[in-house]
Amino acid sequence: MTGTESPDLPLVEDVDERVVPPVPEHIGDTGLPSAMIEQLLLKMLYFRGDVTGRDLALAIGLKYSVVDEVIELLKRQHLIAVKRSLG
Image 1 (cartoon, helix red, strand yellow):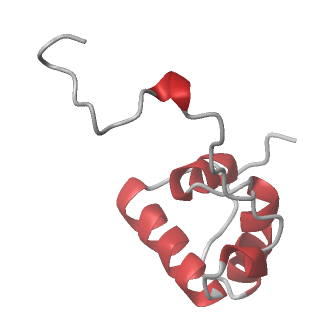
Image 2: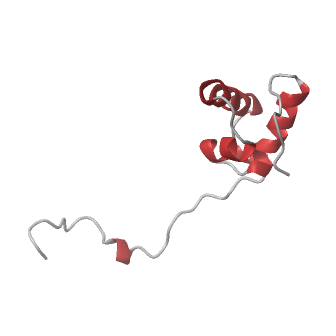
Image 3: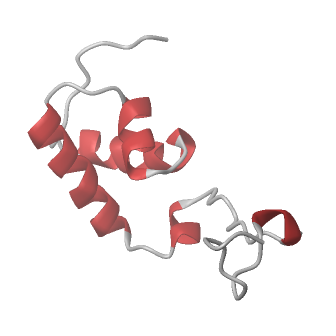
């Protein structure tokens, strides 16, 4: 052991079990109200301008399939518009 190592902290190699949270598949799985996700998406669109749906999802750390529900709701409410589709 060199003088810079701390004897109280385990080495990364010693830790076999890692805690990985489950990936949310639906809005309810996030534990956040859908209104909060709507606000995050609208805020990002306001500050960034034209953004793809996939980039919006990546920016808030969710899969597109989860964010798609909220995007469709915002489109029906005419709060956002689709400029083009990449298919």
